[in-house]
Image (cartoon, rainbow, N blue to C red; front, side, top):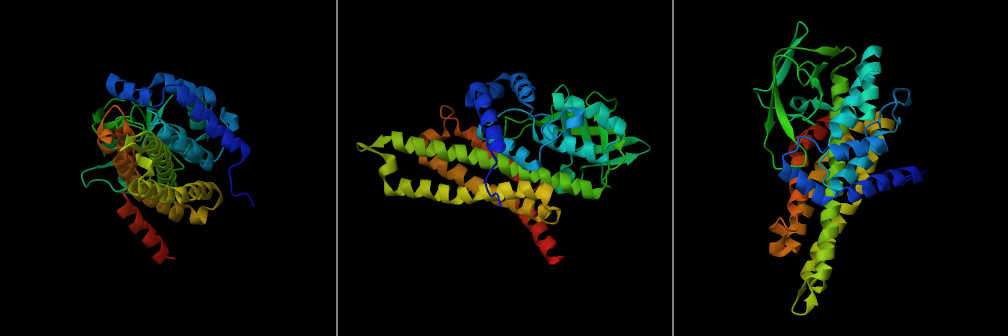
Length: 359
């Protein structure tokens, strides 16, 4: 039995890592945050050329036909580089929804465009993972009404929107009756927003049902967990490097027992998370009976461990950890954003408990 990544999976991660490093890494994220860009077109174009946008799209539609584990590996690298680009909605959830619930015509029209990166899709299903009482979307007579919050990949050309009853619908970002509002969040690397729908004509995905919504939420949770894994690993690596370089009293601070313990605590907490995320990604495609529970475990546990690593890595840096010069806050805030998207750890653990109790 194979418990490690395949050579192809390791190469996938390395290829995306090298591209993002050459594209600027932290400095690219900093420029995106400061420049007011709606989309990082250079990153989106480069990732499309690498095949990332078509990762899950079937080969017959121009994609690679890979697995959700492969997508989680890419999400991990994107988190490590705090990449300001669409992925979870555009390259994971939207292709899943279209391939499983779309008509032949919808698949023929949209999947090749998503795979090529010429169209970006946002996804609205946060209300099914714990929305506000005044949020939610209703479908009536072919039109959508209501309010969708915290869009995944908000800056998009089309949206896949879940209604309250478990249906899915396609609309254009320029549809009549649609009002888009960008929301301010702690994570400036991935814009999110709100949609208000007042009689917006929508194209239903006829094969959608509540079970598919559940699967989309599971997949999204694993992707956010993987993104947190990558972000936390980068914060740990930077803390260790800083502790080896920074000197006090003529010695590197990494030689002090207290700092050693802080770094060891981060490493001991984070390392088992990698296997958890990989297994959760594998379960999404290969172990459907375990997928929801494992996704909950991965999302909740990475939220807690990621928060611990973010806090401790910042403390290792001392006062420098809070400065924009070091830039740790980009990872810190991304981890905080991931923690809450599609359900915070308390809610997700409650769902897991209910699954166990229901047998």
